[in-house]
Image 1: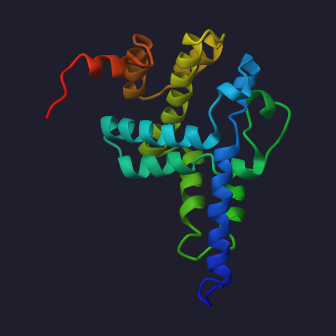
Image 2: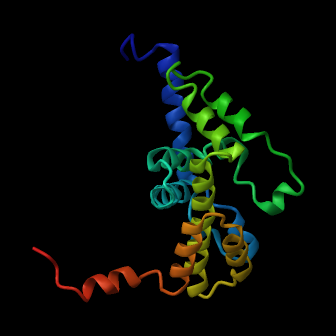
Length: 200
């Protein structure tokens, strides 16, 4: 190990990166209330990735910053590596730490230039008063909606969750995308693609 790598702030930053990888092992907990087995659900990291792509698209459509929105989406569930994936049901009975506090703790030992990135993004997401935060929240809901449509077409009884996610959408672009998604199957993109000759 080099002397530079052993600096406490570099070690703390590397520890944060290991912690972030934990999201790839954490299943999204809310689907179990809909009788969806864990093997059929996505991880927190899967959800964050999809949410970031959706957020980027929504922000572009809504005139917000795609880059900032994608960052909020990527980081919005990172505190769950410490608190677990809290569902609306569990939040009725269990009080988890404020995500802003968790984010500050997560970066406390990190490099000074890193210490404000995650907490700033988490605070913006939680405060929900910027166009980017609104797009990020809708991206979070729209990802759940799309996953619900996929599970519904697999025979899972998730109509209630689909309805709640659709009703929670606030931006016009998210509502339009939800309406479009409802009219197609999750694999339609590839069927449409294969009907058209490849461009060379």
